[in-house]
Length: 116
Image (cartoon, rainbow, N blue to C red; front, side, top):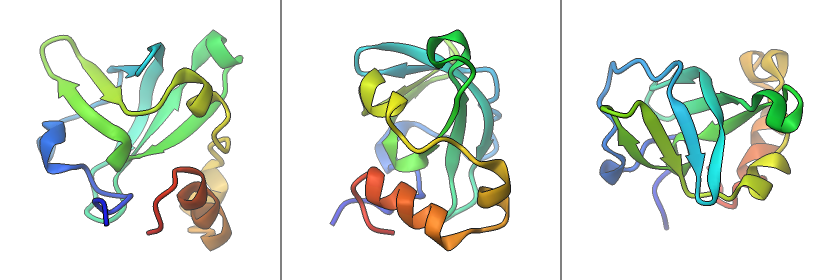
């Protein structure tokens, strides 16, 4: 089984306590936006990415396990998904996420292909 969906992989280069807000997010095939919010809580780590005009202001939540590399010097986060995969991801719903809606978490878990 792969790393837990909601944790950074040991090889991502994530350092606890580093503020990723404002970092550019790079999919496997190009830039997708900037980190608007993030959590590094063990078992509930994620990025909320503001895609800006690329998907007309849509925000998407990316589980921490999708992060392959963090470049502190260039302020970039690299993820293991394509732009289309991210575009087709369930839209981030702040109220459902903060309310810990299990159905929403299950939907994200199913979409990203790893049970949590």
